[in-house]
Picture (cartoon, rainbow, N blue to C red):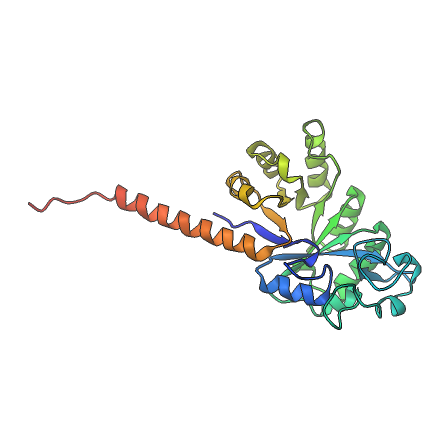
Length: 259
């Protein structure tokens, strides 16, 4: 059975600071397959790694991200971060990305797409990079520009029964590799429906005690702020299945009576 991908939400692990360079290394060490990073655009149209449109919550600065030039923004310390953690340019992150993980770039600013594609092409590894995009046209443009990229198409309420078919059809048509849906709606029917359109299904973990049931129906990617705990759960699940398989094989093996 294929193990689901573990996605570190905003590069987080317990005690880490979101979208910080130090957090990226910790997420990779904690067993994350993908490390999600939020991307915004500066005044001089350079992509930087920040979640909010305003600076106050996550940095020591104030104001709109889009009103700061990149040379000044990348000198700002991140709030509650390790010493030396500052706002990072996407270029710097891609040039120093851990070998064992893949980048998952969630574009919070649609206008950042051309600059992000240039950065990935020049400084990253397109075949080991995901984009998380909200507009089908952007998915189409990204996959035509860099065919090695894999893209998740996001759509609010696209998971609802009356809109699910059009969501999955459009995602497949524009070249998306995956969709993302809320944790509470995952069931076998939804996952099978997405798989028929050759789409992986990602979802953000809400409760660890419900992880097993989501894995049982074929969930492909778990988005979490605690990759290590999810990795531990997957290993326990794999060991239990191995023991069960051995037991079944032993029961199926005929015994020979030598008397």
